Image (cartoon, rainbow, N blue to C red; front, top):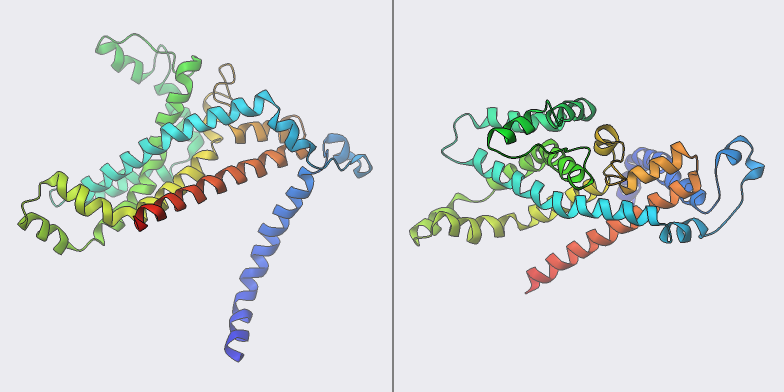
Length: 292
């Protein structure tokens, strides 16, 4: 009894901080999502009206919301596999016995993660420039016509995906490197004695041992990519033709451009429910695979 009380006493400060700075704001935001909180209510709370689920119903019938959800889904479906593949390949190369100065490569590949997003996004805007960008210059050198990366609705989102993968893959790479170093070397020695090729070692030893880490990294990456905002905000401002407006960008517009704070809060909770549902689905699918 005394041990349990002592545990609660030690945990109380952390629980208090979490409650004040996390749970209370979340509950307040949910309450706001059930109202028509706007600029008029911000000036005088007597203008605030309770509307129930009207904000949610309006969003689900809004073409703008579904367009933003489609853009975000496109970003997630294409960007997450590319990011995971780049992270895993980089981790395998850094962790290879043939790699010299692995610490230097880990630092260099992780550097984009800690770089300021706005600063590197501005650099990428110049790299993707239609006339003077280095990327179009390289494409022209091999005979490919100039691409208006940030001005063409068909190419704007792929350009943002390319930038996001470059910016974020180093974080997952570090996690994969740690997981690779925890795999017992005896497994690889046994596989070589059985005559396994490098590909067979990867598919029969490395991937099965990385499955828990792969699940964790996938969940973190999906949750992070659903929160797409800074990249289109800096690089395209949601254009061209709303082709890069994400769910979070729409929430920003509703909340801080049009001051529809009730609608913005509803968007936040819809995004939370989507990420939660996808996470639960991923965990269930992996659990069924393990049972099989």
